[in-house]
Amino acid sequence: MPLSPIKTNPSRFPEGSLTEPLRAPTLAAALPPPPALPQTAMQSPQRELLLGHLARLRPAVIKPGSGSIQYPYCIPGGFYDQQWDWDGFFIASHLAARNPPQPQYLKYWVLNILASSLPDGDVSACISCDGPRVGHSSLRLKPFLAQGAELAARLLGDYHWIEEHYDEIARMATRRETTHFVEKYGLYVWEDAMQSGADNNPAVGNDPAETKSLLACDINAFIHREYLALARLAARLGRSADQTRYAALAEALRQAIHDHLWDAEAESYWNLHVGTGQWRKCVSYSNFVPLWAGIVPPERAQAMIRRYLWNDEHMLTPYGLRSLSRQDPDYNNVNMIIPYSNWQGPVWPIANYFYFVGLINYGFVDQARNLVERLTELYLRDIEFCDSLHENYCAETGAPIAPSAAQSKNGLEGGFIGWNLLLEDMIEMLGGRPNLLDMRA
Image 1 (cartoon, one colour):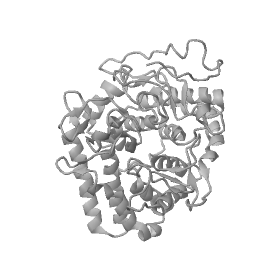
Image 2 (cartoon, rainbow, N blue to C red):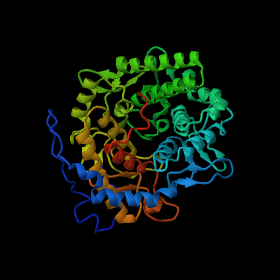
Image 3 (spheres, rainbow, N blue to C red):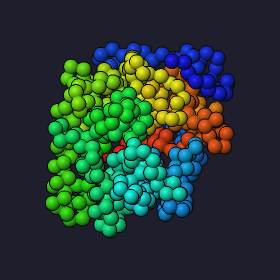
Image 4 (cartoon, rainbow, N blue to C red):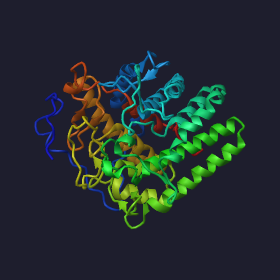
């Protein structure tokens, strides 16, 4: 599929670079490690330059409360000025890890959500100053609320506000038990790909006749973490019955993921069709989310990483890791942010954050370090090109895809500053900083 035209600075993308990708060496089954990087790479000039740019760009993610949004909130930038669900969670998580820490934005994210219930008791994925976006049933809060509340309370050292809102947090965090849970398998479904946030992920799809049909790796890993967060909150508030119940639900969901979504022959987790009982064998970003959650047995994780993730026949590129295998028939790098953002191949920084944590969780530290080097170079090229960043990049050339100048309100290329800031967290984790989002401890 041909690429959409992308306006670029020729000095940053020389002739031929948009059509002739640099090739990473194909990895054999034994997965030889990437070239060793010096221990001083954490203080490399490139990284120091990048961190300076991120510090300069970071203030753009914070807006003061206004209208229906009562508290200060985090935005992705570009053409977005609303509080989005998982965008806000990951941006606020990044702010919580700064020096000095700013965990208050996670608390504000939670409180803005709690104040924005829809008439049906659900909550929107998007909250604007005019109120929550009602929209389609796909635009509903993704499973991060309890995780955000737990992390905010833990980092603030303050559980009093949690006690006041505990029942509502628990209700919202578990609302899918009556709408998206399939008892036969003990697993959850997305409404469609749009609801998952990976808007056109072919591992889920957007066929109106196939809603709630895929038991997906990502939603079940997310909800597993929600139950762990609820158990932690219940323990801190002395609600022992709730703690026991949520811990048991988390364990049951973890086991169901392993029992029903793992394909031993293919060495991968797949989404499972509720009606047919068949796996959808699509090597997509969402298959790897259980690695981020840290719930995969080591031998399975290592096989999956070797066979698919750190392999340029599937996910690996010189610019990071793809959102969909290059072997998939739907693979492309077209700028199709309208009507759906393209998760069918481009390099997404947020997906690369998931991959990075998965690599770290299972001992692939050299690969994680190598991934950060690739992303650092990608970011610096983009910053030199437009003095900002984008939300995704062409996996074949590294050229920025969206938002384009035509898609931006101010007519300028880029401007997307949000969860792509997590590259700084990745650099810090390589330097020994704990993963604040790790729910396993």
